[in-house]
Amino acid sequence: MFVADAARMEDFYTRVLGFAATDRGNLGSTALVFLSRDPKEHHQIVLASGRPEGLPFNPINQISFRMAEFAGLREMHRRLAAEKVRDLYPVSHGNALSVYFLDPEGNRIELFVDTPWHCKQPMRVPMDLKLSDDELWAWAEAEARKQPDFMPIDEWRAKQARAMH
Image (tube, rainbow, N blue to C red; front, side, top):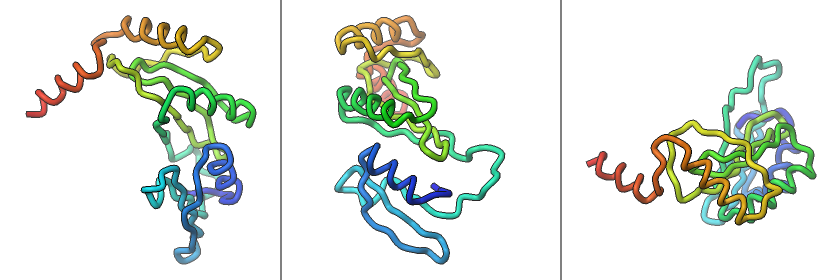
């Protein structure tokens, strides 16, 4: 992604989101910083200098990162709140529990964990992370069950596999 302040963005993505800078260099006049959270991946994001000033909108709609577990999602929400990021909000999509926020340059980021359910999208219901894990998962399932096309994710995947043959 093109960035205006590469040092600030590298600091945020490494210090707050846990990425590591795996490489860096220049391609002509563009400075590149390669970032990854996976030791098997050279990079998952590349920060590139040269973001034009004065764009009437942010060209990135959203970047989504799957979290390994719900405890990690809770911890990231806590860290992001302490960081005072803009537009921090947790939601349930039925098929995922997510935390959204804006990075320092206004790019929308989603951190999420999958749920064991499928329901018709889009679905977005504000989620209260003050609930205990048990209470939150029970609430999330109840909300998902209210949605059209609710089913266990394995059933949905089997249905998709049949439709693709």
